Length: 115
Length: 112
Image (cartoon, rainbow over all chains, first blue to last red; front, side, top):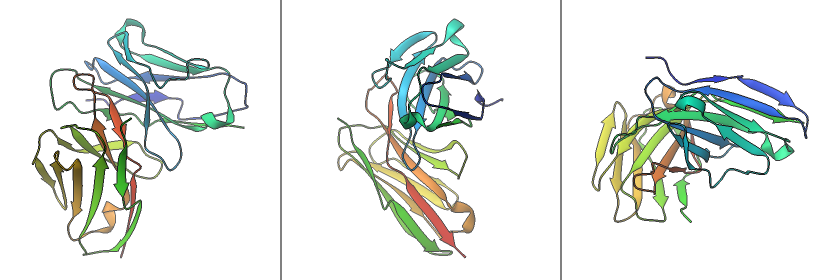
């Protein structure tokens, strides 16, 4: 079974520029998550999708971050404009959504450096 | 606001020794997860604990959950170098919403 795919793996941009990340979850997984992991910290949830609907985006800085999951499969996360403090690894995860005991499976992440 | 705290934050131990990582959380939950992260890599799921008193073991790692004390432990037995990594616990607060809050992580280094 193929895992969660993300691209690009690395991105370097200057502040105030825009950037977009792509995620393809495990086939059949209805729930998709985007996390931000700052160096030395645990991942922090930005947004959660169930199929193509948003379940939770309470921690998404909506003035600059946006995300979509068209057709309930792939997802993109965009930052516009980027700030220095956005430098982090952006992790995508997916899970089945059927009762208890779900596991979230993580992709390799995109390391963003904002200069 | 949910807080998930791990200790120690850093742990350096010799091969062959035993040690325990602790995960405390501030609000009632009966779902707790342990993940492993190698440097520059993504997170790998280790254990899923779904009830009070749950205990799971895989190789040299054993995880347990005490929901009354709001405490989970990850015990390492006879450590080997391959276990060097950062370990995260994560707590699910929103029953049915499957939203995880991660701890600060414990960076474990096993010294030969």
